[in-house]
Length: 250
Ligand code: FPP
Image (cartoon, rainbow, N blue to C red; front, side, top):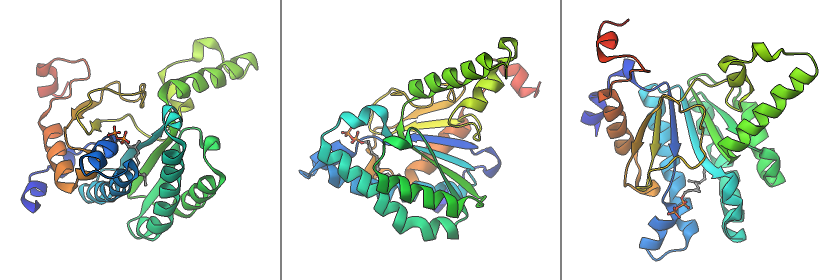
């Protein structure tokens, strides 16, 4: 594994890595266990990926933990996922501090149980001055919902004469997204073999490289991340330009 890590060029790692953590339920089913057993083991993968991202010098890591659609899951699963989130935050605060990691969230936090809101607020406050890695957890998040909010907030400013229609541009939109303080996503990973975006960061992934792997989330470990980043480094990002222009750095 060290060998794998050594092949990664430190100056070419994605600045912002986003992950759709999928397959916890199937992983548990394969083992004849309840779905929540998959989520519990998924937390270990979250820890591995945070550590490995920090080691590689990735600056922003955004994890899709709970979508606006996930509220439709069985009540018990939702409840257990929420308590898993709270207990993980409690348990990991010390290591977030030790590793200089700042916690952030995107999504409708008001929908979450009060206990989760309180824990998140506390951990965000305590880690706000950390600078090595910004870890953002998407909770009750949906990209369309985010875009609707952007439009409402920009419209309010127009109506109140704080902003002219002619002034609306990509920058203004960026600044109204939940992710206003984060750069665009460079690399998006989805586990479990599904090849879709599922309403995650639609605006922010415009130029991201996409990576799909059959590995189920609880099996996704440091080594899997190193392999994914190696593939990222082998891709040519052109942002609409030609290969020749990229080679000449134009
Ligand atoms: C997807 O698997 C996973 C989720 C919806 C939840 C992810 C949550 C965690 C890993 C734990 C808590 C998170 C943090 C940040 C501490 P799935 O249930 O959709 O799996 P399936 O598609 O196989 O059913």
